[in-house]
Image (cartoon, rainbow, N blue to C red; front, top):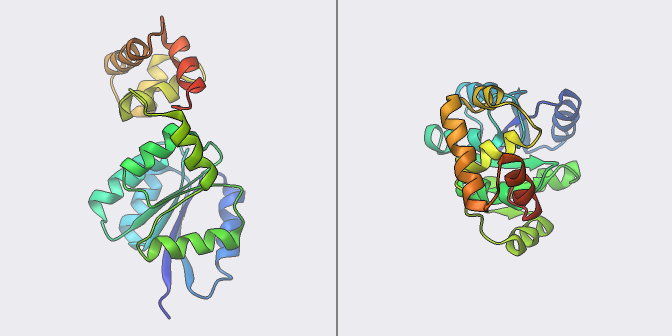
Length: 203
C-alpha cells in the first residue's frame, strides 16, 4: 500500500492539529509536516517534499493560492488543494488557474477530506459542487489575479502601506492596481470597487 505524504498548512492551530490527528487515523495517509504561514508552508514543502499539500486559502505572509503557484514551479510532483471558509467564485478561479487540484470548504468531514486527498494524489480533481455552481453563475471577472489579490487585501479598509507589505509590493504599485481595478469595475474609488466585486462574487 502506498502511503500519501501530506503537508497541512493552516494558521488556526486548533483546526490544523485536529485535522492532523484525524488524518493520522487513515492507514494510507501520513502528515509529514505542518505550517501556520505561507512562507512556512513553502519551507516545509521544500524540506519534506509531500505528495499533497493541503493549504488554507487565507494565511499570513502568502495565501494558499500564492503558495500553490510557487509549488507548481518548484515541486511539480506535489499536488495542491485549497481548504477555505471563504469560498468565493473569484478564489476558485484563481486557484484553478494556479494548478490547484481541489477546492473544498472547511465544512467537509475528515473522512471526506481524506477521500479528496486520495483523489488528488491519483491525479484527479475535486471541486465542491456548490462552489462550482456559484463560480459559473458569477461569470468571468475582468480583474487580473494581482488586482483581485490587492482588492481583497483592501476589503477590510487596510491602508495602502499595510496592503503593500502584505502583498510584497511597493505602495505605488498597490495604488496602480487599486486604480486599475476601480476603473475596470466602473467604481469611483477602491471602497466602491470592493463592494461591486463582492456583489459579483469576484473577491
